[in-house]
Length: 305
Image (tube, rainbow, N blue to C red; front, side):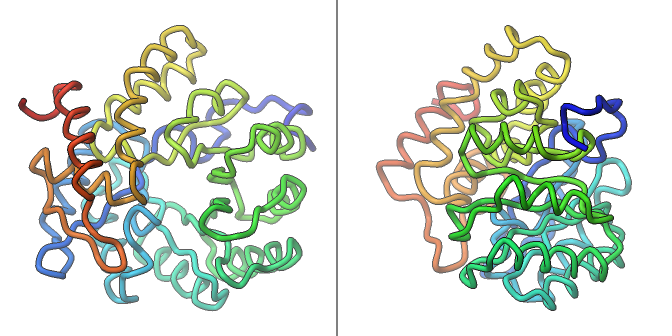
């Protein structure tokens, strides 16, 4: 079945809408649990459809297994059913991905986001075997995360179509940056296979082509604004969506002047939400991008001049 073969109801798309790739705040080298809970409260109050802890934006690569599980547990507790929790549980070690995903299921997460195996550079067959093993092990709805710029390997649309036929694999966070790839995904994958933007800046064009929402970074800072964009796209009002998109775009661009989540953590610190602290090998935003980001925040009324 292809995306052109059926037209599912909106409610059939399991993870549609606005999801925030949540940062992990630190203080003195430790997870700042109080700040994390405040961030989650803000997301709930903004009415986002879900939060995604322990992804790339959450610096999962530098969290210990104990910290990883603690962040997911806090996220589920603080969300308290008011918004969905899609736990980042990916790894380039399939057995570790299975274990992390089972732990997320035990904590009460609604789903899991799994980055494709990085560094190993598996074949397309290897990707299918990896995700199939996790799906069979965990019993939790899975979203594939395709971001070849970080992993070194693209998951092809043909492979995604194969993955979409595996019970429990319900969608993809698509960050290949290729319009041709998006077209093939919509042509080949079932119509109820959720396609979410993995790049804030292309949320509008991806949704215009048939996408179902975004797992975003800018919504850590302005959740209502990203939600407005997604909701307006979903309603088919693309004239209004373009206005929202172009208001958001300078902010999105400023947040990505250096490697994510360096920019978003700096912005959250400038607005008083968290401390500007990352774990090595990431370092705080450098001087010129910091001033550029501050200028955009002032222009958008997010910090005082």
